[in-house]
Length: 126
Image (cartoon, one colour):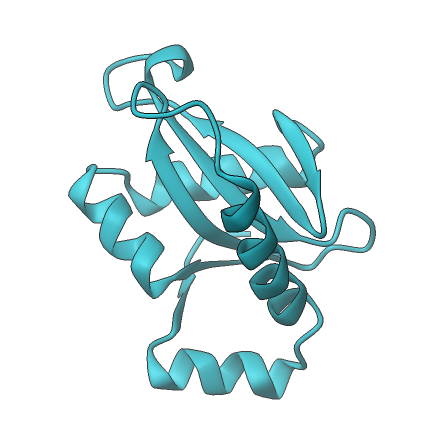
């Protein structure tokens, strides 16, 4: 399993003090089927607990991955649960397009994105 975060998501997660280890835990849970919602188009909603608190006062993240035969997962978007309930249909459509491109990208394309700094691979200690 390879876990990635987008550049903008990485900035947001840092500003909210969400650690890479928290993201790795969430990715492992998502791969195990522990997600809050299947949004379609390779998109899934996953909650992450706030540091020192529980998931009820935490964050919602939008992940992109293939449910069956998944080998990569991408953190695409996140927001505090108290800020909003969900993403808009327009955001969902855009994120679905991005997720589809990433999920279906070749290993060479993923490496190129990493090289340009568009995505960052997390060290989750498989």
